[in-house]
Amino acid sequence: MLNHQTQTQKPGYFGPSGGQFIPEEIKPALDEIAEAYEDYKKDTKFQKELQSYLKDDSGRKTPLYYAESLTKELGGAKVYLKREDLNHLGAHKLNNVLGQILLAKYMGKTRIIAETGAGQHGVATAAAAAKFNMECEIYMGAKDTERQKLNVFRMELLGAKVTGVTRGNQTLKEAVDAAFDDLANHLEDTFYVVGSAVGPHPYPTLVRDFQSVISREMKEQILEKEGRLPDAVIACVGGGSNAIGSFAHFVEDTEVRLIGVEAAGEGIKRIRMVSVK
Image (cartoon, rainbow, N blue to C red; front, side, top):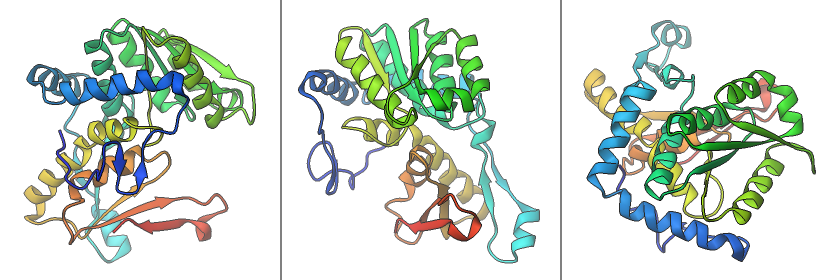
């Protein structure tokens, strides 16, 4: 697990960003999660159990693959791909979900809720909740349930209840709001699993730490293959969980550029790249 010295100048903050700006009724639940995580992240039993699930359930380590043909095509840097698509269920989402649901189990929670947009986080949450024999409800914008019918089917196949949210734009934002409403009404038994590097403290820290397994492995693997750190780490940015996990163990390495790439939605000429450092 991480021990970032760059994370916080005050608890719950990443430099000038972070904190909790939330309704008072859900503050006790988030404070309970933050306090529990501070205890369990140092707990040998918790860490050993998490590592066993990442290995046996998710299939870690994922390979760092030398993309020889792409390297030749581009004619410049050697390109390596961190194959998070080879995780069980086909994405990086399970890294974080296994960590958060294991934390929920240690806290004595029996019900899991989550939000999802494209559906990958929802599928991972449904699968992990089924493994731990926990009730699971996934909130999803009604428009997204139509666009992602296959992932809705997979969530339901895994035993989760998928609730379509019909208010507002009927997409991810409304699904997040609905999940927080649920949490406010079920504080005693419910744990909200957030899938992106968003939301009030402690969620960005949880997502960062549980996804940091990506960059921890990546760092070990590139040193083994090349004998040095990479010139740059490039990650796609949507909700941010992939990028924050890919960057985490390189933040202190000033010689490594960290570059997030987010599509602007109007074709290749509008793609935006932002250098984190």
